Image (tube, rainbow, N blue to C red; front, top):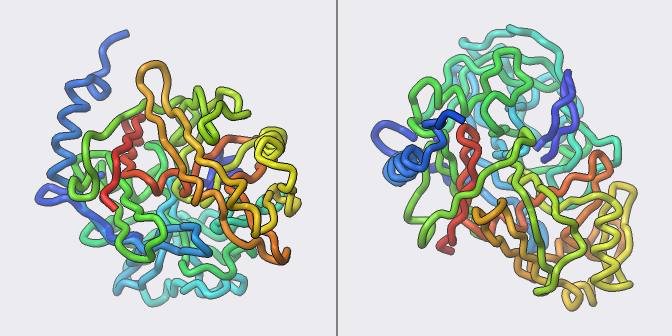
Length: 397
């Protein structure tokens, strides 16, 4: 998801254990941290360390919308399903006092012996992209509440004193989803918390994981079998080498996109940069670029809502769909990532009978090119928010 603002404007809404890696079933002076030798050592270490946890896939039609896993909060622990979101920085869950939080499980702070109301800071996050395939209104939607502190665990990883947003308000975009909150896992030092310490980076700097790397294995269209590895990679989930590219300086997992090809032909998207966002279940671009994309694909596409969703009649959209390839990175350090044409159709659009949604939506707030799940779930992806790298490998599906 892409965040637009917090208490101060946030740019967007968008690891390794000593003994074993943690895999979550999901749900001009030379800089030694960026030297080839250091990165090579990191990769070797990542192959034998980390913590993997399972994640679940929320699927609608044939589209993979979000991946989520269970987080434990408080003492004794209260369980919540949260999505892992590389486009945001911090964690939020719903408070027992929330009356607009839909089906979300709520946190009862009075039942936790480790809970602290501190720093007791009011906060809100506004999001420019949502959690399903429908677009948000131009002004975005969000959540609001208070920053508090408690113990937060995933698998065998524990942060005993973690700040997070305890919400008394969820806007409509979170009213009917199969998860309870969000765990942001952005770049190092990117946060809206007074402590400046998001959960993932607390793990790293406390030594519970020895590498800043985390990785995703997301089998497309499968409700189970996905996983996230904190502090490394799981070699059983990919084949061949991992190709690394450098991030740009956009404050998120931003990469250069010097070229893109639709159906094997140069696309109408200008050379630009893009945000890679595990929490966005579609692609976005500026309104003018999206209009040009669909004009090139066929006259039967039209805008479906004020939020920027586009689509075509369900009986023809698959015949109009194209394979999309994006060259990610810069110079000779690039990777060609391809979305197959069968991922183009996000399925029937709510409230418009016979219309199906295309993979690109217009994002008025900044018009950023965001590449989400329809591309990322085709690969084994490795995210290094400390050394500003992204890695891609062929996943074993």
